[in-house]
Image 1 (cartoon, rainbow, N blue to C red):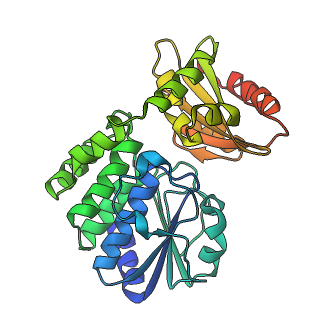
Image 2: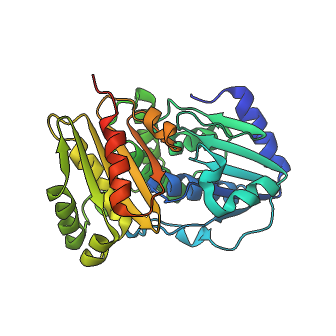
Length: 321
């Protein structure tokens, strides 16, 4: 177990006393974000609670296979008896739902990112956990909330995406046990794996190839740039860029990879990956956060060229010795 009995008891009391519950997670949703939010919401609904998942962002196509997406809704209450912030290390990471969280009677954060500083009625932040879905599994099982096959599938999705199919070094024996337990509880692992890893559109593969072929190699570091023009040319989504930073990191001789993604005017999101370097420190220094070997931040500059200049300097400044 990763969560103390004291915190679990307090969490149970908060849930039991609440009639309305809101759940929000970080902007640019990924598998762990969506899996933990929808999985936890389903368990709470099956427990008899009135639960909203505040859908404040666009879900990329690769996650559209997930069940319960209809509950990721843009219809919100003004406040809730209990508001959960999941898989986010800072309150402003939940975008336009931040005022709803601040207006709610009670708040609770469940997260696994390094350096989280959210101040709520109950903080459950376990930065040694590789996925928020691992923590939600523990909450659901330890509090005896209902765990049906769909809930298990959602939590398994977040577990495998945030651990890169159990490959990352922060995966523990407990993580593997959670994965196995979710399988025995009915998680449709074949359905998850086929949709996540064996259904890539050809246009996405061609887009990835374009990013990789234009990547800039700097000794043991590498930088890729995903422009809005390239996204439009290949008819993909900007979120389809994310796998490239992992592909580049996995190359022999590369210690740190970076990708700069053009999201909009003056907004360039950066993802960092490493084999054994702490890139979360660099991300936090630049207003972001994340994990030791997988982090990100945002660059606000007047042009993509300027953002690339800034990103290059930051990448060059990361010590790898």
